Image (cartoon, rainbow, N blue to C red):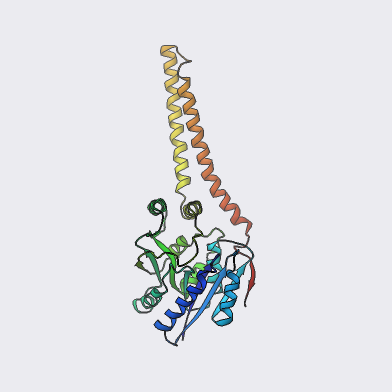
Length: 311
């Protein structure tokens, strides 16, 4: 007997949850036998609709369902962490309730682990059909940048949907950081990973919770969490402008001694001052971002707070 834990992050998913459960149960009955036990861990991330009521209704029908309800919205990273900590399966998968993560791939993912010797199987979209063009453009640019400046590889189009062995899950849970960026954490722990590609699937119901601004903030989280290159860049910028300033001083002194014209050129001087000041503020902003993350880590606040759960 082996057990698979399905972790589902839910935020305002009252419409999609019944559809997800129906599809997941159909796959379970068709692709798996009685030797495979399932558990569904539904994490309500402070939903403002009837998501929790729908979860409780499903729980009454099926005792394979466990649920956790947060005291407020803590974000998807916190929901995934809570689900992983609650899971008890030999294999654990992370899925979204909107059916953008096809349950039909689960059998193939499990076979790759059991028969091909992989420790985890991740999924990636090969197309971004249905996604705004501007979002797709910046997403691709982000992955190119992060893979150049980070010491861990992040796959373009990678989803959070992946199947992992218990060993991989325990390794991820051993990382106790407050500011979590799971795509980087999955790469950081290593292990042998297979990638399965599939066409993008649009949401079965509801609307996406990821605005362009939220995605930008999430990308910034990833850069700060897995690269110190912005700090190095600000240091080099400071050194570069120090050298420029030193050469400019020598030039001005020589010009004054030769031509005796110490007052001309003040407009260009103002432009230089404004430029250098902007660079300084930019560098201070980079340092401030790293300090703010350190501040949050030092406070050691919980990643999430549970208001209610069924066990």
